[in-house]
Length: 223
Image (cartoon, rainbow, N blue to C red; front, side):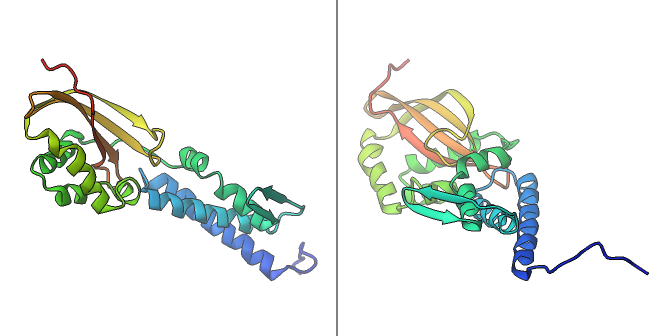
């Protein structure tokens, strides 16, 4: 006759919370391993779900945990949720997989600059990375106004020469990810040269998409 080693009662709510935590934690580990260069939205989904998973597991761990913050107080499972959720940058950096696409970033950069040079600002906006559209270029009208006030007065591009590029992971002020920043020396119709920096971000489908574009206010020496 079989002998059971389990004794006592199981709280169904705690059991379900534990199962919920295990299932979603496993899902997120698979997500982190198989999904390169997650978008900002995917990163939030990852962090929220992982926070819920931590809360589910924390619900069945004995003990008392209280968290007091200037803007929130929580205990138990909710405290675990807050601890995980508020550490989003460190969590994303330690778990997410950032790797540069195998293709060159230059075609994406030149396609974008071609649209800007032709004053096809709406088409240029459509080429932006989804992370840019959710952050620095969220307002299309403001995006267009910034080009009207900053880039268009410089006039037609006479020539543009690439003078460097470098790759960086999660630069300050940018959403987490892998970036390639390409610099040009550009001569405009005024016969003055300005530095142009175009930042591209590696995407989940392993291509480069433009994230940011800056033209120096102060001219630089022309060749």
